[in-house]
Image (cartoon, rainbow, N blue to C red):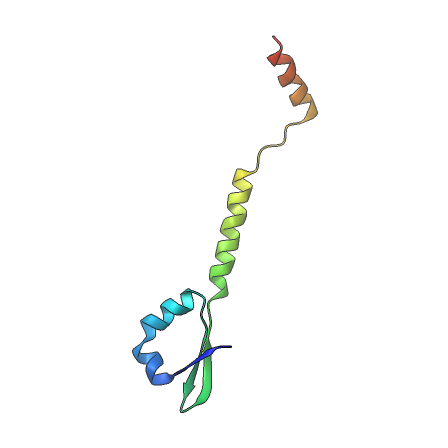
Length: 79
């Protein structure tokens, strides 16, 4: 459930509210008790983190060695 916050408080405490949203919290901004807008964490940040994780996994992926290359490496090691 979203925490409700009045429009005046949202205006005066915007930097604090944005830090809390960045940390994962969500708010419903109200005007005279009537819900006006929902303030939720951006999905773009999640996509950016996911893309970064994928890139890191691909960088860490070990190269595939073919059977012929593996056999050649074994033979070189026996000399």
